[in-house]
Structures are given as C-alpha cells and as structure tokens.
Amino acid sequence: MWVDNKFPAIKKILKNEKGSLLDLGCRDQILKKFLNQNINYTGVDITQNKGASNVIMDLNSDFRFEKNSFDYIAAVDVIEHIDKPLKVINECLNISKKMVIINLPNVAYYEFRLKFALKGDLGKQYHFSGKKEDDKHCWFTNYHNINLFFKKNFSEYKIIPVFKTRNKLKILYFLEKFFYKLFPNLFCWSLIIILKPSLNN
Image (cartoon, rainbow, N blue to C red; front, top):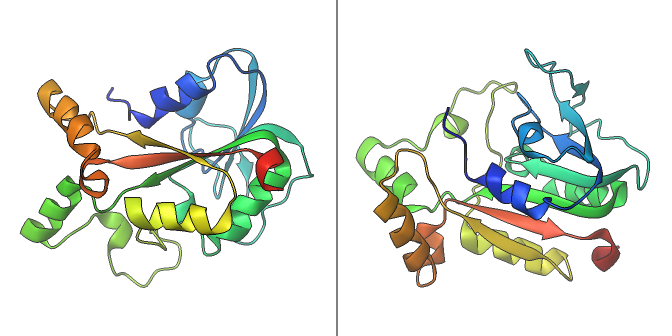
C-alpha cells in the first residue's frame, strides 16, 4: 500500500519522543502505525471509523479536552475542514503540553493546477453538492496563505515541506525538492507546521 510521505515525516519528528498523542480526524488511524511504542495514541473523528476505535467528536462544535491533557496533538489534513481554524489551533495549544503538529495541503501545487486546467476539477473536497455532511475543504490553502496565517497569529512556528511520492518517478521527486527552493508555491505538495505551547501561550 502506498503511504503518504507526510506520515514518515511526522514519524521522524516524533522519533525519540514519548508520552500521549491525540490524533484529530484520525480516520483509519494510519498515523498510529508510524509512532514509536513510547507514544500512547488516542484517535478522534466525527464518526466511528470501521476497524478503528476512536473518540467521536465534531471539532467544529464539540472540541473538548482539559488543559495540558496530551503531550502531542496531530491534525493531519484536518484544519482546512474546520470553520474556525484559529480557534481550534489555539485549543490544541491549550490541550498540548509539548507540541502541535499540523499538516495542510498546498492547493497551488503544480499537479493540482494542471488537473484544474485540463479537467476543471480540484477533487471531491471542492465539489458543489450543498450537503453539509460532505467531506469538503472550507479553505483554499497554499504555501503563501499558510505562511501568512501562521505569521500573523503565532509568534513562533516551524514549517516543513512535504513532497509527493505517489505515482512518481524518483527523478521527479528530487526535481521537485530542488525547484521548491525557487518556487515553493508550485513544488510543495503539503506543509507540516509545528507549534509549541510554551512559545505561543
């Protein structure tokens, strides 16, 4: 099975860490498979997912945990689905003792641009159905506006680029890493943002 490169990247960040981790929007709990045995995992999602035991919670209306109740919070491809992202991120910082790890997609990535130019479609997260329960993005996130958002709202943060590996020739992966330095908005597939509560509370 192909695995999104953001999961190995998060594994590297947490390689030598220990403690408890809350995985927001956990779905089938892929992240859990990449965590070391010293991390105690709890998954959260809006529904009970098949084959995964998780806490049921709507992050838009019912995000509730006590202050400092987890060492780490992971929000992988979740914040772009939230009505009030700043409120949820601040709540993550309130809940976390050590680190908040967020992954956001870069919709300005060149493959997305080509898909839209040729097919007029950015994927199911941007379709127009009018159904509230659909899995949809509330925000159009790209490299530039992600940086602006975190610069405006947080005193300290770190951004790590993630490069697409799925259906890629290896040479394309290395070319994208090179061109990212010149054109980050075009050649970065997604971004991992790291926040630490002590720096932002």
